[in-house]
Length: 406
Image 1 (cartoon, one colour):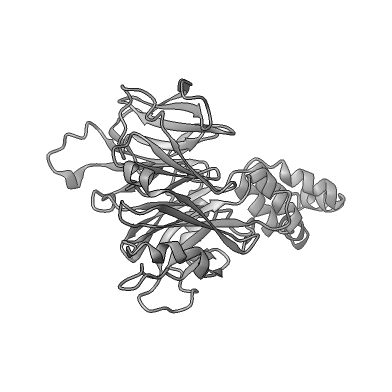
Image 2 (image 1 turned 180 degrees about the vertical axis):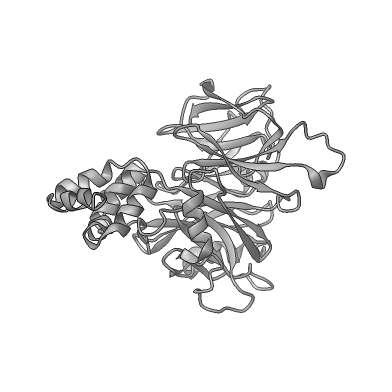
């Protein structure tokens, strides 16, 4: 009887007061439990306007990550004691379709390309003997909904066909259409799809961007003289609304501003001659409006340095933060090499890492929250599972606190 009394008291309050009360709950699981308590609470908590306010106050929980291996992929959920482990377990048990079986059948199947803000970008196989672009979809695995992305128009793709060079493949990734706070002011969210055909080095670099809000493709091109000199070979990374490619010698960045559709070079990179830059000891992140952040690992810490993206040529890098690594682990490395929805993934080996049998090494993945700089154990991994294959972080508000962007 006493357990029901607080609920009856809450039910006498106006909807507006209840909403403010629910928004002040610290933990999202508490809100999910309140939604299950009675129909009135669920009606308020699952209303679109309430959820948009909630999403503006809380970061998307990191539910786990996908490891991509050719056309197949495998999902690894956050495990206890990670703060998102309960939600991740529910999603992995079937709350979301993480095999993408709701997508239409296609010869050769769908290949996962990128994940951002709860949405997944998949394509058919890369173009083969002819110069054509794969079919592309953006889907929401939690709500089992998808949107087919239109083909790049012939007039926009004509320079690629005239180049006389068949693409060796395509870079695809998702980019946010607006700042998070701007999205909360809009009725529905939107996204951008970025596509770069990988041509031979003597060709122009052309990047295509599709905006779901406008429903059109646009293109930006870097001339062949500069393109040949920089030799872009890395996978793209998206931070904020810019896309980055590292050059072959890891000494410059090619940057695409997806708002202005401008390709330009970032030359003052890496931060210093003593900065160790490779694909396991450095990661790119947003460091405030208009600033590029770079995380670098040393033996005991993660260091954050930043610099204005459009700053003067003689501007120095600024040291912003030092985050201590957890004791008891060694051989730290970055698993993903850029900020994804406010998180970076790291791997560490339990103990000294000097065990003779690599199969018995205790490998652990950790998430680094870039707002709180909290380092949490995400899940254990085997050496085989942790092999060098692309990793896609998956963040989403779990049911009943989620909204579909499609």
